[in-house]
Structures are given as C-alpha cells and as structure tokens.
Length: 448
Ligand code: ATP
Image (tube, rainbow, N blue to C red):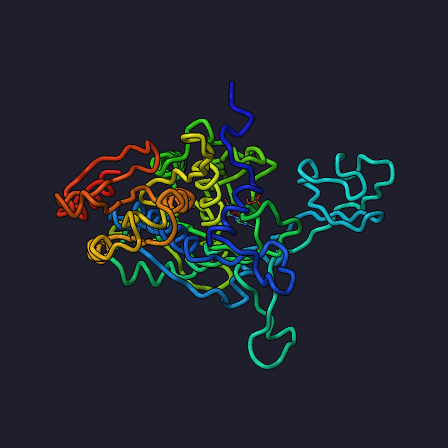
C-alpha cells in the first residue's frame, strides 16, 4: 500500500522555525510585518540553494554533451506572452467568499479552510457564500519606460521556458547542437498566486530550473519517459526516500494548454502528496506559436530533413526541491539523554561540509592548529571554524545546519598529529592523521 503520511519528525512549522533560527530563510521585509509568502535567504539558505542548483547543472550540463546553458531576461517583449498563450490563459479559477471575504482557488478547495469554520472546507459551512469561479491571470504586470500606459505594459516572466523558445534560433546557429538536444536555464519566475503558503512551497517569486529538450517529433513519447526516469533518479540520488516520492500522470482535463502529456514527480511533504517537479511533453506548441506570431522560422534543418522539433520539459523550482530535501533530512533524536535536531542532508547539498573545532577555544596551540586546518580545508570546500561555547553545543549547531563532518583538535592532536573526525549521522568518531584530512574529505565528498 502506498504511504499516505509523511514518515519522519518534520512538520512545515518545525522546518520554518529551524530555517529562521539557523539563517536559512527569513520572512521577507520582517521589520515591516513581512509580505505574504515572500522570503529572504540567509547565509546557509544561499549555500543550500546554490548546491541544489549546482547539482541540477552538473547532471544536466556538465555530465552530458547534449544540453547547453542559457540565462534569458526576466522582462521579455510582451508579444512573447501573447504568443505563448499566457496573456489569454495563464490563469487560475478564483472564487471569493462574500461572507468571510477570503479568496480561494476553485480547483484547490479541498486543501483550503473556511474563514469562519477552519475545520470545514470553503462552501461546506452554512454561512459560506461563494461566487462562481472566474479566471484570474497570474502574471505580474509592470511598465517599461517612463509612461505607464497600455503601450508600455510588460510582464515579469511566469516561467523561464519562453526565454528558451525565443532563443531557439540563436542557439542552433551558434552552438554545435542537433536534436535531440536541450537548453537549460535557472532563473527567477513570478506568479501572483491566489493562495500562496506552506512556507516555501508556493511563493509569488521563486527560482525555476527548467530544461527544454528538443527532439524529432516521432521520438517525443520515448524521450518523455526517459526524462521522467532521469529526473526521478536525480531526486533519489540526492537523498529523497523512495517511499516519499512517486510519479503521477496528469489526467486529460488536468493538462495545461500547451501540453500533450505531463507527469508530475510528487513528494510526500508533511502537508501531503504535492507536485515537486512537472515533466511535460509540450509537443511543438510553443515553437509553432512563436513561428506564427514572429514570422521567424524556428525549425531544425538537417541534410535531408526539416522539421519543427517537439519539446520535453522537466520544470522544478529551487524552493520546492529545497523544501523536500529539508523535510526528508530533518530528524530529532535523543543521544545520551539529550535531544538533538539534525539535518541529514546529502553531503553534496550540505551548506557546510566540515567544521573545524579546537576542543578548548582558549588553548593557543589548539587554536593555531585548528585555524591552519580550516584555512587549508576552505580552499577546496565550504568549511567553518568555531571556537565559541562548549564542544557539545558546537556539535549541535553543526548538526542543525547539516554539516556532515566535524574535525576536533584536542590534546592528542598536539601529541601525535591526529584529529577526531565525527560523523553527523552515525556519531562515530575516528582518529585520522591531520595531514591529509582535506584529501580524505574531498574523496568522501566525491564518492557520496
Ligand atoms: P501548481 O499546480 O502547484 O500551481 P504548476 O503545475 O502551475 O504548479 P508548473 O507551471 O508546472 O507548476 O511549474 C513548474 C514547477 O515550478 C513546479 O513543478 C514547481 O516545482 C514550481 N512552482 C510552480 N509554482 C510555484 C510557486 N508558486 N512556488 C514555488 N514553486 C513553484
């Protein structure tokens, strides 16, 4: 039977509290009371986000020969969004409750709570008075230039994908690519979501990691299956528990306007099964729309073939990925009668790989050795030095930010040149030679 409840100690509230306490994520504009579902990333959040993005780039660009990178603008010519269908159809069905004045997504009423009776869903309480659904466009509008009129209206991009489609010609004429090939991009997207919430899960401003993979039309279904498997494997390799991940194919009525088939990789967040990543077969919809609207030929011309490629798109946001990794990694346990909270993040994702700790922070000889080791380590990996507070407290701080290894310099180090290497997960401590520690950890990181 499929798991229906999240297995583990995490709740969204606990994750949000840890993220704030340990400088991963702060509520945005905090001193002004915040701004709904807007967050700022602190030191460890920036490092964690970067590690997730780097792993995505590594698997799609560095370790492959058939995918190239792109970084397109956030504000595009507004014609792009007319052609793509976003101006007309990128909307969610909105319902208002005339009684409690709250707004809900008509297709997500199941997950919402009535303003008057939170134990009920909107529409279930006798006083609920819901309007019929109406389409609400999710794009943020802005104006380019000094005049705020219709002619200057532009949009903050709601997805990075269109920036890729409109660069199709630039890429095929400047890079040595030939279908099947992909263009991958990471960048901010903006959606004026009706009901954002659940911490990082649904935000109005978020970074997307999207790849458009262009293939001969007859091969699209096969590549769709291929990319679902590849992306599933990526999540599992980086540590998500298989019991918390599943693939769900969209039913016909659920498909977006551009899609001929979509499968979601879903994660069992503490709030239930939710979309983590979407993998869509977009057919030739987007290229054809841009061909018709711009008059530019967007096609592949080979020696004896000419066609408009079909497109497979894996799309995920950094925050949904980070939230899944955090939920999966979060653990609470009691060790030697003391509670500890630990993030069992994959070493490649951990914001800090190693902490160097002199056992006695006031011992000049220990501090000197520890500083020297730290300075050597940080040249090859993200490392931290800490000599404040009792050693147990320093370990717990590193556990909470997910640091896989701690190196402690103690009396014995001064005597025989070995250090204690503490493993975050097993809590095992081994003595290793100080000399060669950097190489040892670099090897473990590569092998992880
Ligand atoms: P949903 O149904 O949850 O609104 P969607 O199907 O509209 O999502 P897509 O357009 O497929 O989402 O976006 C691709 C990916 O971008 C999603 O799988 C998700 O990882 C991420 N994403 C979409 N909207 C948000 C958001 N508001 N906040 C954070 N991430 C998002």
